[in-house]
Length: 108
Image (cartoon, rainbow, N blue to C red):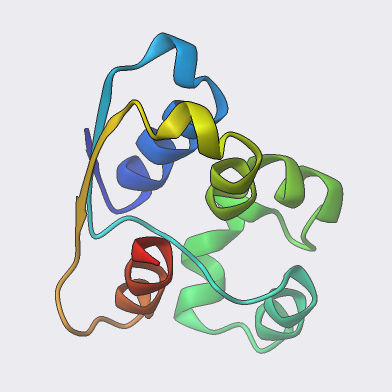
């Protein structure tokens, strides 16, 4: 279970190692739909979002690391195993980082 960055971490670890988890929960998880290239451009703008995300994704973003830890990619990779897992996540309707869009995309 985790909130915000902790929610990202909970989903990332559960999706990467589904054999170790029977359930995962995330609230307002930091699920980012932008590409690494878009995020690198955003980081150059020195926005609040870029500064908040830098510890998680790097500055500039290490694209190989990004792809290896992306919850969306991990969900696709381990789709069959995740069908056995209880997965719960939620998010409000709007925040400064757009995490609600990531939650909606993961729901699909």
